[in-house]
Image (cartoon, rainbow, N blue to C red; front, side, top):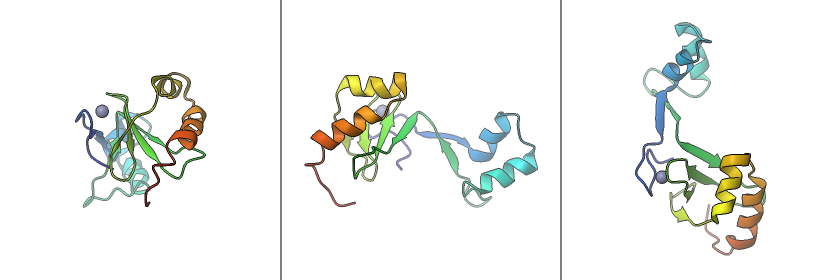
Length: 117
Ligand SMILES: [Zn+2]
């Protein structure tokens, strides 16, 4: 994924995974490192959590998306291209945690923009 939003430029990089786990208060340094390894974190590849972004995997779509929580715009998962969706659908996701509506809308309106994945 991109490190920042292609539309508004806000960073999507959060804490380094070990730091994020330690902040929960549920881990010692050792168990945080062990748990972080399950996310692919290594001392050489200090992966970070994502922040301010939602990964959207619509049920009826072949395409996945990032929803930036700063500018609330959709972007194609694989190239970051901006995708317009109606405001009420973004609200469904943000306020009701409902991705079914966006799944249906994308299936009806966006699949004609077929692209290689
Ligand atoms: Zn944004």
